[in-house]
Length: 384
Image 1: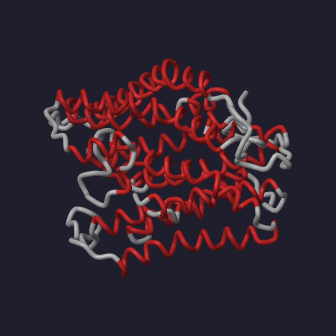
Image 2: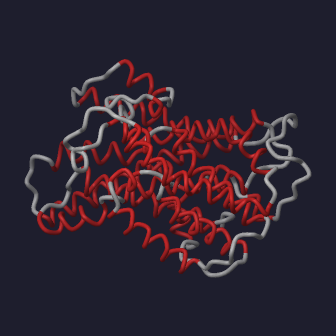
């Protein structure tokens, strides 16, 4: 069983939230009243799932930081983790777009290839090619910054960590305020109430430095847990906080619902799951099947958007399927996504991580060699 298995299992739950969003809100596999109900329930699921991944990323990388590691070694492992899957799905997206006679743009294609699309505030760019890879653009920024941010956080006295966490949490709430009153642009009639511009949405949802607030909050939570300053909050109350937070984020104004405010409700859940594994207490996310699916979650995330988009376009959109058949098509899209994820993980991701994922060199450590970790702090970064 993997270390911190609950966090691995929770990854698949978060990936399913994103899948549910893309199949009930962005596309409608199931029609009728059932489809309307699914639409209402999962309208915020994708935003919530992405925020979970950002918090989890910061938490796991901090928890598993290796004494004596090098900046170059860390960057290499992170690139080996994300770039091969990205390149394969980029190629798959290009092939599907050619078959569908979709339009390529030079800026969008190159920005996606080099994972800089989230930095460009143009509506045609962030979701080009394999649309979900915009989040990798943010993650790449997080990875490049991580060694230096970690050194700063390690210097923060334990007694001040909660003040830092509160500041980061407050900043996630302030970001939508800045977007609302400080950023203009032409309103998009098809988003929310039609009063928001793409630039406002881009600032809170795509812009990597703003999304980094969630990542750093995850880092601080890991440090709080490491030094024993995190309260012993059980998984059940932490889960209830996350569910209640989802309800809140589904009812607040649009910019607050899509922004990093979800981290306020999800960070306790991440820390509680890690604490449960550290203390070897019960966890519903530690089952063998769920952990295995969690290991496939990154590959699943990378393929599911293409499966959903083109299955819907070619098999569902113009077929007027009754709800029951729509549900079968939805199940088929899920199973196909899982099959492709298994292939991508087995033949691309896992072999390359094993081949190039070892540490190299001892200069410029990411963390001080003086830091001592418990056995569970040796969580495999490859499972982040």
